Length: 222
Image (cartoon, rainbow, N blue to C red; front, side, top):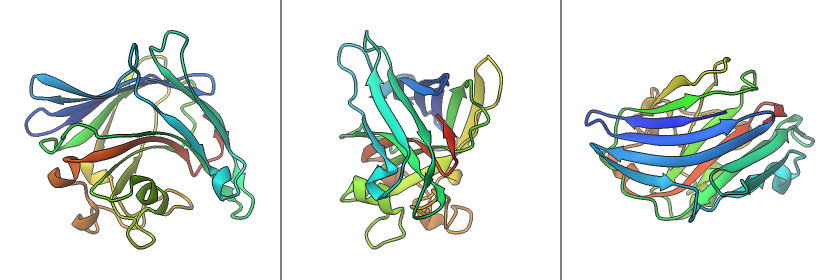
């Protein structure tokens, strides 16, 4: 999958996120907030690549497998793997690539997350993206999804990749994100439409501490 992601808002503020999903792998090149005419880069590769770590469901007894590696020239990262059922749950598990750190203030962003994507596996239905902010423990929040005490603050949304060899624009409104979702399936338990309290706000976008790319809740090669 090739992604070019933007966060568009009332002040032309965007998030750019570039990836490639190809023959069972996701290749990521950059993640950037563009504020007015200036870009604020969140994730980058090259001479000083952003560090990502692969985390898979075996930590909860699952059998999904995945890896995260940089290309030989460090110009992009590659997440490769397969999501399979967690035996104890008899339901699909997950794989994900995680980056932790102090990301730039994105509090002026508003509107939507825009992805420019392409995929050789557009039939896969478990693509998700999340970011953590306003939580004392991003890893805990992105494991609990608001379902256990003190696990709010990891905002997640799902998306689909259209078929075709050309890049396609996929827009994810901020109203599609929620910080209340099931850690077993990744599905939202409370939507932004149902309760504004679960929506990302300017205040929440001020202190992003974690960014995650997920393949979750659907069996298949990623």
